[in-house]
Image (cartoon, rainbow, N blue to C red; front, top):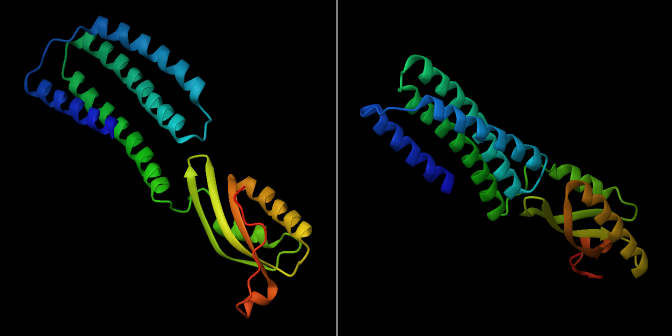
Length: 211
């Protein structure tokens, strides 16, 4: 949201420059842009590849800065050669577009997490299929999947099983949890129910706890 606010400020300044063109020092602009490009490339190298939303937010912002630095270099050369300072507000408008695109994308993902939507990166049907393929599981229902943060998904579900031995049920539970890790589901609550509960009200809760 702060980046969007900054973009509005840049756009306003660009509008003022269009109405009242101001002299631009192309040489100094070029030097500063080259320094900025070198710094941004270093930061991009350090931040790339993370699943964390905060890190990705910083990465996308720096990527926008990197492209902006390249555009500033081009504009500085153009201004130095032609003296056409109109390139300055035009460049500012391009930078605003880049910043807003990256900011809106991150803001959308943040809202998905805050409202506890099912993460788009996870195939819900594949999760259910993986759970039901575990030996001893006869079915699952009331499956709820959401994101706790950008790199941690959470699940709770009811599991049908004919198994009565507590130790074996715990083994089944651990097997399910292990399979869920491939979907970045690191916290899950599994409530086991007897097979007969599909047809009657008898419910057997065994070892319900997050983990």
